[in-house]
Each structure stands twice: as C-alpha cells, then as structure tokens.
Length: 265
Ligand code: SF4
Image (cartoon, rainbow, N blue to C red):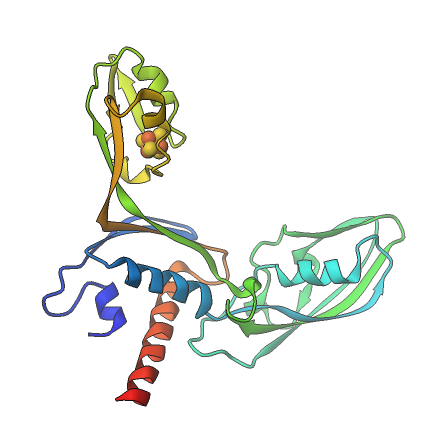
C-alpha cells in the first residue's frame, strides 16, 4: 500500500477514514481518523517542500529612482504569488515579466507585463511599491519553478493540523455562562437560557486555546483532544488549487519512498 492509499484510507485492513469538513475558495479542512501523527506530519512537510510552483527568481533593474532599494524591490517581486501550471517534476520553464512605470503611481502586480498569461500574478491588487512624482522604475524579471526546499517563496500553502477537540461541559448550569461563552475567540460556545453549551456542528472549529477552561475552571468545562482524529487545515496562497497541492505532495512523497525502495531492496 503506498502513501496515497494510506492517506486516502484505502488498502486491506486500513481503518483510516477521511471526511471533508469544509472546502471554500483556496481553503480546505478535513478530518482523518486513525492516521498516525508521523504520517500526518510527512504529508504536511511534503506540502511545504515537494510541491513545485513558479515565483520570480531573477530581476534585472535598469532604472530605479524610487526610495525603495533594489534588493528590497527584488525580494518583494519574489514573494508575489503567480498562477502556476501544475507539474510533478521541477520544470525548467522560465517566464519573463516587464515592469516600466513613472510616478506618481501605486504600482500593482497587475502592472507587470507577463509573456505567458498562465503565470500572471494571482492577486492583481498586490502592491509592489509607491512611486512619487517623477520617480521611475524599469526592470525585467524572470520566474522559474521551485519548491520549499529551494526557498520559502515557493511554499504553496499554509498547512497545519491539530487533534480533534473534546469539550467536556461538566456544569452547564453556571451563573456566568454568558461570560464564559464570550471568552471563546472562535465563538462556538453559547449560553442559551443561562445554560452553557457548544453550538451545534461547530466543535471542530475549536482551536484548543483553553481560554474557556482557564476562565471557568476544569470543574465547569474541560478541554482535551483525541489523538486518533486529526484535523488538517490547508490554505493555498493561490498558485495552485488545494487539490493540486495535495496531489503533488502525495506523488512527491511516493516517488521519494520508491527511490529508497529501489536503492535498498
Ligand atoms: S478551547 Fe478555546 S476555542 Fe475551544 S471552546 Fe474553549 S475558548 Fe473556544
């Protein structure tokens, strides 16, 4: 059984279950039951390091009379998320960008002329710099594929996981139920009719901060977690869809394991 089968909960005798909790835009949350923490972490690290996305790598500045140093400008350009055509191998494709502007102007990512629209900036309104009256910028940039092992600018998403929360309300009839509910930063506690409870269907949104427990005491509400249930949260920076990110991370992990198997067996 390969990593993909384990992550997808297939395979003989595998009791793993995967349930999609939420998927909207660039974000996805899913619950995996009976997944080992080491495998969960392997998937997280594969997303951070084995997924290839495009980002600006080389910048040639012909003119910069703005107050922003060339180095800072080049760094900002590198951090602009670019739409990326998914590839499970690092591609040698280079994409050229041109930027030539005169102030007064706020220069946005959409002002860059890109030779291949498949690699245009994800967010047009990303601000690159402000040019005062008469200030000029004239540069050429080249984007290339890379992954998180090369540089953090190639990391495709914010990804983390946590155990499934257990909220044990021992005494729902507390006098200060409203105050306790107000302590919850994600607003999942309620105090209807003076009784403390968790809003229906919202327990998986608990971030295990224990603010309620610290305020009310363990004799009223106790927070713990179930290590057999892991909630994954993935937010793409926009270069790739979450589905493409997971696909590429799992296939990257599989090829690394195949390589180990090939060399040692
Ligand atoms: S642990 Fe934090 S997030 Fe969870 S219910 Fe308590 S206050 Fe809310």
